[in-house]
Length: 455
Ligand code: TRP
Image (tube, rainbow, N blue to C red; front, side, top):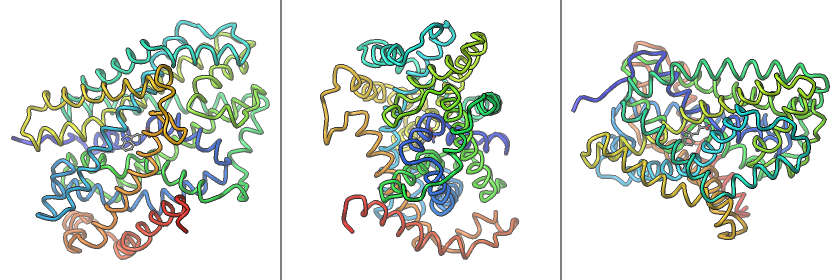
């Protein structure tokens, strides 16, 4: 069977950036920033992007592009007969888990986009009203599930169109659109009177807040936001052509992703400050963008209801767009794995993944209502999925990827792949190998262990 490729360089970059930019940037990043102390967290986060994110992204790109296959097969090709294939399999499994809970939040964004478009927030003034809307909705046994299913089916629809006509074409439209909406929102938010203290929160670091837990969270967020550690970008890279410059693409994707996360921060915190809403720590949670923000929009533009309307509608549409290009990438990992490993038609394999994710997603959706009492260590099903996937599975996957390319993989093969057979220069080669061998894996291990109180 002829394997598809992305049709253009820009298409490949936008697809990878589309995977990286998502709810992780706009929903999760501000939450983590708020909970972990603002500017100092952002600096630790950027450190994680450079020391962990970029080397691992390069590794995923080179493994995927070299082998031109799904992530489990990729390790089998490079390391036949060894247990390395389990790194790929762990990735497929993680992808399946993340998609299931991610689609729940993605589903909420659909509800909120509709509420915003229907001007349902107008006239609501107190925090309690917004809380009620969110709690009533998220604990409802029906609607969150309906939107979850709608969202996964939307993803399914793009996936079955294939790589170039589905993933690439949609990314090329959706990503520029997303960037424009984010930019407009930042300008509006920062220029509101009283936005200053929100800006300051993001720019003035307080290092006394940096603890081991903050570093773990920053690392988890870096992996999550860059779609790393589970073979997602490895799978996309298998559709890159031989001329794609892997180092340049890595840099571009990391810059786009970090920029959008920071911009999301500059939408949310200044707007909250301007509205004089006072973000208390308990307001910063999964519900930040669903309870706090709509309220902020109404307060901030109270005098001009039309602006409040446009601002909130744009914001939630933006979230849908961002989430969709990411769910597509998670779905693709599992779909390509099943179709290539079990010799299934692409559409059949996509259908299996869609069904499984919906089933698991329903449990996550219900954990805000009917199943709220199903807890482990005080975490709901949803929290367990999120915590385990981002703080454990992704970093551990990332650590093995670094060990694989740093220690196991043939040096010459590595060099040939990142230089495209000697046609682009790679002056950073030695440094990269050193980082992959020692810095990245040890740092990940230290951060994880220290959080289990092991040293
Ligand atoms: N990076 C995406 C975001 O920021 C989410 C995502 C897509 C992801 N693919 C992934 C996270 C793979 C972890 C692993 O929203």
